[in-house]
Amino acid sequence: MTAPYAGGCLCGQVRWRATAEPANVRVCHCRNCQRAVGGPFFARAMFLANDVEREGETLSWPTSERVDRFACARCGTPIFAGPKDPPARLAVSLATLDDPGAIAPEMHIWVSEKLGWLCIDDGLPQHAEGPR
Image (cartoon, rainbow, N blue to C red; front, side, top):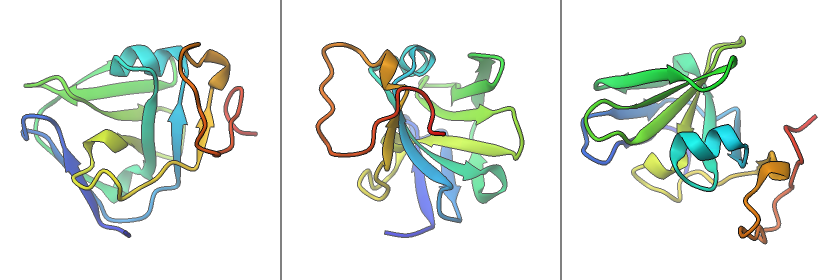
C-alpha cells in the first residue's frame, strides 16, 4: 500500500492522515518508548510533520529532552511522538493505522534495552542503539 495512510485512536476522537511516504519505519525498544506506550516497544512510522494532518484533542508531555508524546485526550491512546530536533517530524504509532498491515517496520532500534523475554526473529536488522 502507498500514501495516503490514515488512522486514529481507540475511541475515534483523534484521527490522522499522512499524505506522503514515511522517512523511516522502526521498532524502538528503548525504556522511554516502553513506558510511554505501556508495552514492550513502540512500532512507528516517522513522517515529516507537514505531511501529517491531525484532528481531535490530544494531550502532550515531554518524555525526554528530545521527544514530546501525544495521546488522545479522551481515551488515552498513545498516538504520536514528536522529536524536537529539526527537521520537524512526527512519529505515528503503527498500531493506530486503519489498515495495520499498510506499513511494515524496516529495523529494530535500541535492542540493548529490549525486554529479556521478547524474542525478535523477524529477520529485520537490529541496532543496539539508533542506526549510525
